[in-house]
Amino acid sequence: MARLTKYLKLLFHVTILVLINYFIKNQKQIRIEKKIERYIPDIKHILMWTKLPSVEEEGQKYFISHNCHHINCYFTSNRSFFVDLRYFDAIVFNVQDISSQSSDLPEVRSIVQKYIFAANDSSDNYPICSPVYDNYFNWTWTYKPDSSIPYKFISVYNQHQEELGNNILWDKFETIPVTKQFKSSLSSKSAAAAIYLDKCITSSKREVFLNKLKICLATYNLTVDVFGPCGTMKCGRTSLKSCYYRIRTTYYFYLALEDSIADDYITQSVLFGYNNLAVPVVLGGVKYNKYLPPYSYVDAKLLGEKLTAKLIYEAIQNKTKYYEFFNWRNHYTIKESTVLDACSVCQFLNNEGWLKTGTVYTTFREWWNPNYIERCNRFGLTAKLQF
Ligand SMILES: *[C@@H]1O[C@H](CO)[C@@H](O)[C@H](O)[C@H]1NC(C)=O
Ligand SMILES: *[C@@H]1O[C@H](CO)[C@@H](O)[C@H](O)[C@H]1NC(C)=O
Ligand SMILES: *[C@@H]1O[C@H](CO)[C@@H](O)[C@H](O)[C@H]1NC(C)=O
Ligand SMILES: *[C@@H]1O[C@H](CO)[C@@H](O)[C@H](O)[C@H]1NC(C)=O
Ligand SMILES: *[C@@H]1O[C@H](CO)[C@@H](O)[C@H](O)[C@H]1NC(C)=O
Image (cartoon, rainbow, N blue to C red; front, side, top):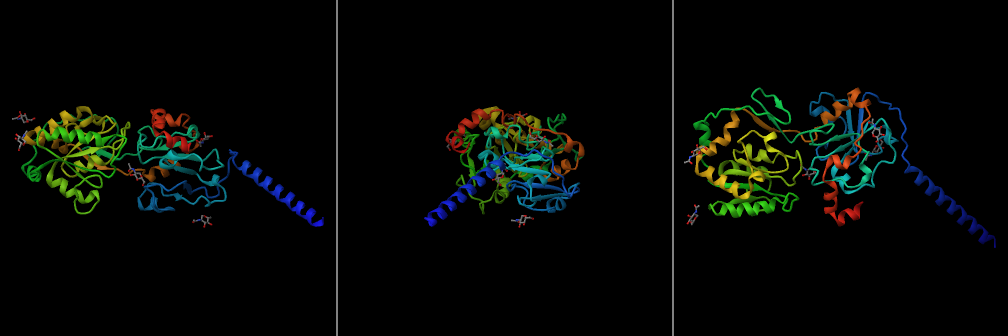
């Protein structure tokens, strides 16, 4: 009997313990929107909720090694760095994670800290579907020009080495014929076009366009050589870099087809053409005339596969026409920019005005991708499983 009482007593205690645990757990999910004093006021602590693709270094290293204007920022991906998440000045969320889940998120939040949405990829590849993220982020750090902290994949400079902004108004430049020397650097070219592909199925359906273009080019006896994992051609190693020399010496055109069609989304792929003296044939969601000098590229989305093939053929036949694609070089230079440049985040965190102004993206999903409803539905089963 005494044994049974003892047993019942134990059971009772265990039940109480389980119940207490349950209540504590539930309690935790309630957001405490409370201000918390930071104890190291001159260092800005930034938590990467999950690792960012472009920022490998923890601590202040990034800011020092990149010669940032402000270096009093500290990156970590250690969520237990402080006893409380609210000590962080900012928490950075990575698009790849946010797009695929909405359960692994901080349980407490301070009203003075900044939640930053960071994206190194397009809104079409990674739409945000969960309503949790509306009214969630204070700042955005993406390629979209109207982000709080915008960055670029490529930048255009004028002759005075001044970086040009968005919606560039191009100078009317007269056509200075390219020099003999320059022509000779193009003289070894013998094949129409190349492309390097490492993503074989894309939401821009560039693989479909590519096949159509190949058919049209075939009527002119021209071909496209596909390098990389999705093609049959190899240039030494498997990386794109090992193809640069081949592109420069052999191909008239480089196909810079984006893997997704999204507003303002133009990646470094055009540079594989520009930097290797192969005229880029572009396909993407941007208005290319706002981003690239006139007559420096062929807009395949605008022209369609038939006219694109015709233009490629004509330019190969008529060298005067081909050389015209290089005239812009007397007036502009195009360079790769730092994707997700963390210097600018540190700069923003050092600006009292920006810091104090409370901002929040109320209709965030729509801001990121105006087409998100349709795009999230296209995710179909995946969306249902994950949200
Ligand atoms: C963004 O980062 C991921 C992960 O590192 C990478 O696989 C992807 O190619 C990047 N996207 C772009 C457009 O650079
Ligand atoms: C995270 O930070 C805490 C507190 O500074 C430390 O005790 C812990 O070892 C760190 N974890 C890792 C994985 O660095
Ligand atoms: C393509 O090649 C075929 C056979 O070599 C030839 O008959 C045809 O005229 C060529 N077409 C063009 C447009 O050069
Ligand atoms: C070659 O191209 C130039 C420049 O576009 C043009 O003026 C010329 O008429 C073309 N020549 C032929 C033979 O089509
Ligand atoms: C950040 O966003 C949250 C959530 O909407 C809001 O409550 C808070 O006031 C904002 N804080 C700052 C500093 O912008």
